Image 1 (spheres, rainbow, N blue to C red):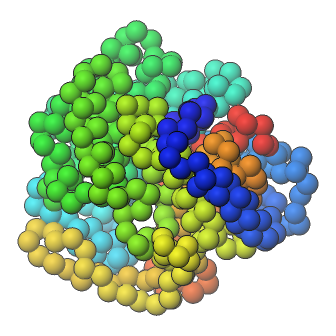
Image 2 (cartoon, helix red, strand yellow):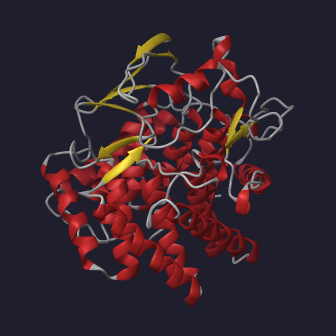
Length: 471
């Protein structure tokens, strides 16, 4: 996990690269810190002058409390489940019958296939990222409890653990071992790459470190079923109603599912889970998929996700499969190339060979999403380097990645970039889409969506830094 003690170097064949990464990351960090760091701002205030480091720590502590309260205010669904997205101005869920922007319908319609009932737009946004948000909140509160010992932190972490138990129970009505997305707060058959290792690895960690004997047994049973689910289906999953066998086209994101099955081994000791996962991760490594799946790559949350998983693999029998810790430095270098002067991630492509980042050109583009129900629908989408969906979460994932790089000695000053990002991410920034002043009118409703996972990951980065006494 991100806060574990650094493991021994598992790749002695790359000592010179590790030293190179340390030096080059220091240079990149100095460039990324060139902008001005703003102080805290309330929703109705403008950013004021920079504060001293001690003042920054106070601002971050205030935000940590504020952002946690914002998350808890959204826990209004069945069983207390976190609502994935709600309206930013009212903090109420999207309602059936509301006039919704056509894009919300278009995206859902273009990707959904015939292998699961299609939710309404309101149901989709209600639970699409609930698993994801619950995992980050759980992780943040486990770190917080380790740092402060506060009973509230453990109580909130246990609430998340119980929410995940509830979701396993809901999903069992469809198929044992499934952990599906709860669209509309109900059982769902669909999963995704991102919402697999998170929350399952974090769920397993809570069971081991904080679970009562009864909770540990419940988690063991759930993950036994979970591991069997993937093996029984031969790695065929349901993505937006489309059945996909994830090992047919090897991609590093498949290891997010592999890690969820390996977590089943961690809790049950069933070696068939470990062995099946090891076979496929080593296949990815042999195919040259680490650290990059190709020569050009979009800078996004995978830089942190792959680093987080690499740290996990480095403590398993797969420690020798790749230079997992060294790769964290490679991802950290790339991430910094895409940051603007404020520490925010620009939308664009990274040349993995030349180390050059190129922002996207602003304008309308047409894409062909995966076939949905046997038909192909063109999707018209707005691209902008500064006003786009994902900017909040991707930037916060880089903040967390920086702490991993610092922790493993790859960049001693990386936490300074993280500090800058956390200070820049004020309350007004926690939106699904950034309105950079050029956002087309039809896209503006996206800027009124609040995603619970945004403050959730902010809290992960904050408490990781607190644990290392950076603020």
